[in-house]
Length: 264
Image 1 (cartoon, rainbow, N blue to C red):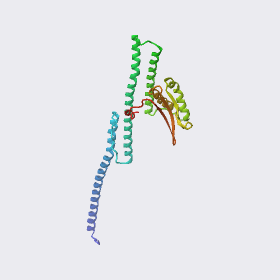
Image 2 (tube, helix red, strand yellow):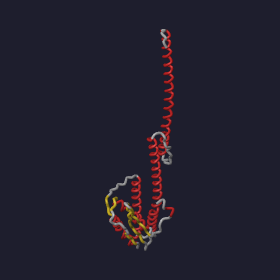
Image 3 (cartoon, one colour):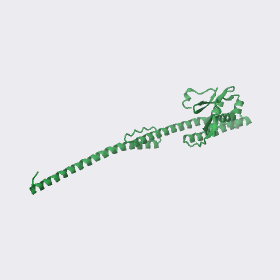
Image 4 (cartoon, rainbow, N blue to C red):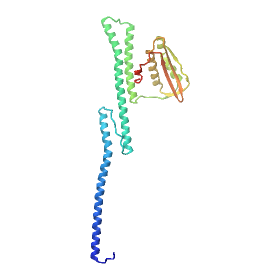
């Protein structure tokens, strides 16, 4: 301003430095408060879904799979983690429900052969049931049934845990069908039931585990045999639907109750 007084210039310099100092202090205070508030807000946004996940994990650890994980709105990583945890909880719940149902069904299935064996043993002890070859054959069949149930439980547990060993091999559908029919033809003939192979595309090749497929077809044919009356008919066939081969087993047995379809 053209002021040449040294004293006035010194006071002006001091006033300027004091003003700048106060402004910097005020700005620093505002910045610190803003940083604290922002950090608190971000920590709340991040910790809330993590706290919910931790609570859900503790609930799952205690066997309660019916948990609802809130969808995290902060970042795709937390959202992905929440979604993955929810899917895991639902999968565990489904597996646990299936295992409970399996044990219940197994208990029901075991009662029949055990009751048959107990009745025959008691009858033989009391002299009511003769120790004939026919009666021993009945008892042997029930023991075989119990052994098969134990094997089924082991395989079912392995399947649920994705621990089954699969050896995939290209196999002609004709070979699968003929092998399955050959295994059961004699039993079907003895019971007076007709077993027919009606495959429409016998030359088609599929990539499967032949042993596991024979287990599947064997279970279906065995089930059809047990639930079809003498004089009935069981047909095993295949249909080609695009790149998919559909194998069917149909019978003239009593069928399923409508309420059992969903469980099956």
